Amino acid sequence: MTILQSRGEIASTRSFWLGVAAYLMPTFPVAYAWHLVVFAPAYDALGIYRPDPIVPFGLASMLIQGVIFSWAYPRLFPGRGSAIWRTGLVYGAGLAILSWSFTTLAVAAKNIMASVPTYMELETAFTLLQFAVVGPLIALAHRN
Image 1 (tube, rainbow, N blue to C red):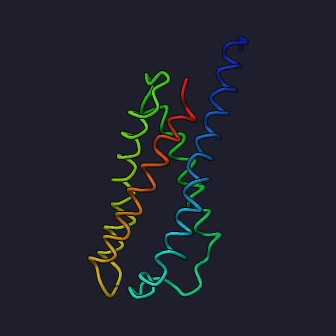
Image 2 (cartoon, helix red, strand yellow):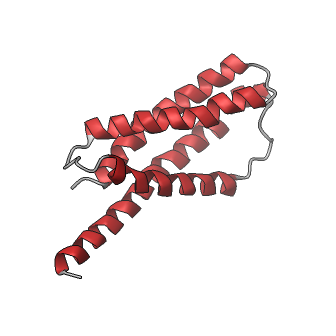
């Protein structure tokens, strides 16, 4: 292994873990505040969530997502250079659509709730906010 390869691997490892942090650091507090504080009464009225959420499960889910999303970014945008905003927002939009399909659309299709439209509005807004923030942050973590 040459020094260049070694440095590239260190940079890649560093960027990978920074990308994981770029996902976790904003996602956990925003999700917690959104679902369990600010809009807690609205979610309670929907009647779909347990009264005592298992926060470590949510954090574990986010860690898995962060690992996958950080791993995927440089593979989906290999020629990105130092671009952050454009690629980050495009990546965030793609992740938002993917996430929305299984965290909003599928949940609304399968679970009993007081108001599907209210749930769709809340979760769509959360998903848009989440990925508008984390997409550019992951791009920043992986900039060349």
